[in-house]
Amino acid sequence: MLEALDVPRRWRGYLVSRLIPPQIHPVSLIYKAAARLVARGRAARNAAVVASFAALTAAVFWIAQSYLSSSVWGIFLEAYLLKLSFSESQILYPCASAYRLDPCPRDVVQQFVRRDLSRADCGHVASACLETAAESLADSFVSPLFWYAIFGLPGAWVQRVVNTLDGLIGFRDWGTSGAPAAYLDTAVNWIPARIAAGLILASAYLSGLKPNLSVLGDKSVESPNARWPISAMAASLRVRLEKPGSYAVGVGDLPDRGQVQRGLELVAISVALYSAALMSALYLYGCVWGTPCLG
Image: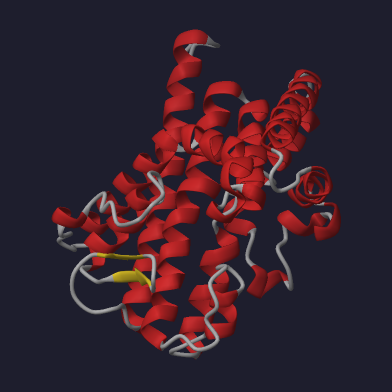
């Protein structure tokens, strides 16, 4: 529900995520603090930073959760802290809105990718949008909620810390000094990435599409996790998703404006499917191990 309320077009900003200024959002603070401590060529030091941030985050949110669960207001606050650990709306709403007004919203899509789109053609801009939305479904929505279901707030926020540090140093140009964050992020998101791919395919079938499953898990994408949601998107839309000089997934042409809108709809359906499935699973778990559901 909190994710559905996070609509920037209606609230002049993200109602839920920005009840606090972006500058003091926990993810922003984690990124800024870690950026001061990590260094290229210092693998041991960076490993210590990653381990320390993960351990400290787990401890802080374990303590917070133990206090919050004791009152009604605490439950609401826990829900808000959980919401701060994930978001798919930050990509879905801006991109969907931009593509309704502009067939090639280069500046909007550029906000969500590292590659330079200033000279990219509209097909590659559309590809970047869909790749990012698919990968974000795994890393920024499915994964934190997956770990929340298992370990509560500490699980969700450790995932967010690991993913944030991977986004800081887990790149090839960091070499072995970025490996601790990269390998840990791969491990943490291994299952969620494959769940996200399944959700995209399920959404496609529910929407009447016929995915080309032969491209699923295309190894031209270097990341062992990102290849799954990205290839699932390419398979569902029967398009080619391409990062020039890096990979090309799927067969056919690059996506057009209509296919971008359809792809974003698949992600939105995936969010709804996963939310419903997760809430049902947690409810049934509570019935078995917690308070009986009936009587």
